[in-house]
Structure formats: structure tokens, C-alpha cells
Image (cartoon, rainbow, N blue to C red; front, top):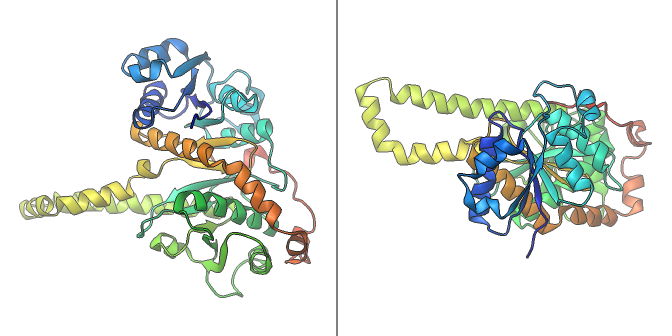
Amino acid sequence: MSLPRIAVDAMGGDEGVRVMVHGAALARRRHDKFKFLLVGDEPRIKAALEDHPNMRSASEILHCEDTVAGDERPSRAIRRAKTTSMGLAINAVKAGECGAAVSGGNTGALMAMSKLALRTMPGIDRPALAALIPTLEEHDVIMLDLGANTECDARNLVQFAIMGAAYSRIVTGRTAPRVRLLNIGTESTKGTDDLQRAAQMLGDATGLDLAFEGYVEADKINRGDVDVVVSDGFTGNIALKAMEGSARFVTDLLKTAFSSSLRSKVGFLISRPATELLKHHLDPNNHNGGVFLGLNGVIVKSHGSATADGVANAVAVTARLLESEITDRIAADLAEMDEHSWHNSGRAGAAVASEPAPADPDGSAR
């Protein structure tokens, strides 16, 4: 199967061109069908390609010296969409020159520019940022929204559940992924009015290829007994940062413990296979690649601090979504949610009586 080209914002991320090109080269080494449009400073990209001959024939360079700063406000970045590497990568998807774009740059700017250029799919009010979170089981859990929308109503949460389930079917192969709403408790009386209305809507809905199983608390996300966790972007981003911080804490704690004495160092050598497995499992580079679901195009966010291996994983996620035609899957799932289920499940609530106003681009998490 011939894949559409993937646009790479080569200037995005903490390390910029060197790591982004290296990561794309690693991805192509594993899957030689990948082709790229590398957007950024041409001399620097050409210099980086010198170390990766497998990329030269598979890549075209779109010269651009301007970049979006990590702390730049999305409203300002939007005005420079036609001159920055991030904006030009997104516009290549809009123009049909590429099937998807990958960037390690400013999350809020990427979300704002992507939404403005590509627009949301019919039936989707707001896109959501989804990512793979490691679990104790074989498959990762899909979690969304992780920061694209700080405030969400019940209708938004239901749409996120539909999109997350479509993504989960690609990743896990389950025909009906297990979906839960992130809440402060599992009892039906817990949570905000919007959470309770969303639960009612999902519980009453018919024709959806998902299994709604109520609520999940944050400490159960990594257990492996749920496939999709749905939240507003404010809560989801905090939960994600807390998990990442806990993972770093455990890793650093083990380093300190194993270096505290000679006996500890001997113990480390004995337990090294287990600790290496733990390190691999907790390394965010091995789960890199957040996806903006709900847009008319595939946009993938790489961690700004990702290594070349992390960027390669983000590119692999991008290719997988292209191969699986994720936007078509989401559209089909939305069509399956018949009008009776959509309009009568929880529609009495004022929050879902009409479509929400578009989010302020500056409200997106960075």
C-alpha cells in the first residue's frame, strides 16, 4: 500500500532539525514505504540528511526559516501560519499535498492552526487531543482530551468517546472498546452535571461500536481494564502530567536507591533486566504521538523533548492512522449514532441543547 506523504515540522521540538530528521529516518528504516515533506531551514535539513541516506530519495524539502516559539500565544501563531514551519506543514495537509503532519512544537498553536486550517469533521463540535497511555496489560489505553479544550459539555464528551473508540479499535483490535468517563468516583451520583448527562447519553445510545462502562477514577487508568478514558482537556492534562511525574519519580527513586551503597549496586546488577523493562515501559518516548481527533486531516503532536526514537514512534502512529483511515472510521461511527439516541439521551440538559461556542485558541493547554 502506498501511503500519502507525511509533512514533518522539522523546526519543532526542543532539539529541532537534528532530532526530527533522525526520528523520521528511523521510522523509514523500519517502514520503507514512508515518504516525507520536511518543512524548515533547508541548509540545516540537508546537513541532517547527510547522516541518513535512506531519507534523501524519500524526502522533499520546503524551505522555511520562521518557527513558532514554545511560549508563543496561539492567537499570534495563527497570524503567522503562512510563514512558519508548523503552519506550512499543516497547510500541506489542507492542500492535499500530504496526508498528515507531525510537529513537536507548541501544542496550543498546533491545535489552533490545525483547527482553523482543516476545520472539524461534520458532527464534531471540537477536536480532542488523544494519546496512548501505558497499562499493566498488553494494550495501551487511549486517553482524551489531554488539553485541547479546557471546558467541555456533555455533547463534547460523547463525541470524544466516539472518536476515542474508533482510535482504540485501530490500536487494540477490539470490536467494542471499553469506554469510561474520568470522574472522582465510580458511583452514578458522583461528578458534574455534564459528566452525568454524558454518562446517560452514552448509556442510552444505540448503534455504537463501543461498550460504555460508566466512570473510572484516575488511579485505575493504568490497570488495563479500560480501553478509552474520556475527560475534559483541563482535567485530562492534569491527570497526564501527574502520571508522567509519578513515572519520573519512580525512575529517579530507583536510581537513588540502587546507588546508595555497594550492596545496592550489586542488587542493581542482579535486578537489571527487571529495571530495564520498567524503564522501557515508563519511557514516554515509547508511547509518543498525541493525535488531534475530529479534524478533516491527521495531525500528530510529538513531545517537545522527544528523542529520535520518540519522533519515530510519533511518525509510526501517524502512518498507522493514515493506513486505517481514521477520519472515515469516525465519520461512520457518528452516522451510526441514530438521531433518536443523540437527541433524546440527556438532551434535556441545557448544556447540550445547542452547540457550544468555539474554544478560544489561547485557552488551549501548551
